[in-house]
Length: 450
Image (tube, rainbow, N blue to C red; front, side):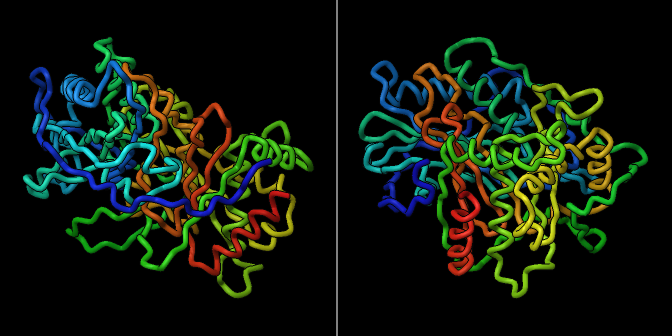
């Protein structure tokens, strides 16, 4: 069924990127100055996310033409996405919001001495890809940083990379995909692919807040009164970590689905999806590789994101531009993860997502109104697998590959697509662990896949 573990290929650690021009771009038309409410989901996501989108050379679209088209497209988009040209601020009550003040988005033009062929396997998370995005502009102060910075880096071969750094408070993965579709449509001088719904009040807490579930997936923090604090979703580990990619082919995923069907006690209600079976497989391996002495009675909790747009009553518009993803969870003792049937683990992952009803989601949002805190579990499975960034059709074609810029974290396992995109049904699993745990994880990954 193909190679499972991929060792690190030779990678260029310095792409020798030269920043040729850095500027601010502004909305193409005058926009209304206003403050934008941010939901309690947006509130805890005040950090930057970077993605890189690689494109082959195109005879009709050399990098300088692409650069101008993207610059113009971004200016046009800053009208329907007026908040993206704004700045984060705290209101008088100390709550984070966006001041839509047309202060501008960042635009960077860069070049590298290398060709795309020189940098090798695009799927492999090369730390040097960080050079293809800019997170902040040195010319601006810390309180005046753009919420979006787009960088076009041209390669010697005529190919190029489009790097985007956006504050996570602006988009989740699904709404960012719609933003990319709109960027592509504006670059082609076409109407917007999707008109964004920017009303974040749709996810406002109820008044008064009503927390109707215990929410063990959320951790309260004791913050002194008057303290301005935006917690990280997970603490960044300072440990020395090995990282490896485990490639699951479509055949592997089909095999895991078949294993899940055998012995399933609730076949009618359990969703045996690719995501659910891969998450269950990872959960078992991660929990049992933990170096915690006698693991048998230890509880392990896996967290994973669930899109709440279709789960609310009434449903959120699919075009909702903010963060509409909440954290689902599954918890089990390690001995059950080791000895229990795989079908039961998949059922627990499926049940975790099914738990996310309208009332549960509203309760979680209300919890965020009452407490400072963030998702809490042993680790999070963060999936870029089915987002389809590489399916976006630009005037110069689809990307060769689209990927997040990866920062290795023990408590986050990333799923991202293979080079053939969502059509291949294969998935890459990026794991970062201390050496001893990684060795055990790799052994278990093979053992439980058999």
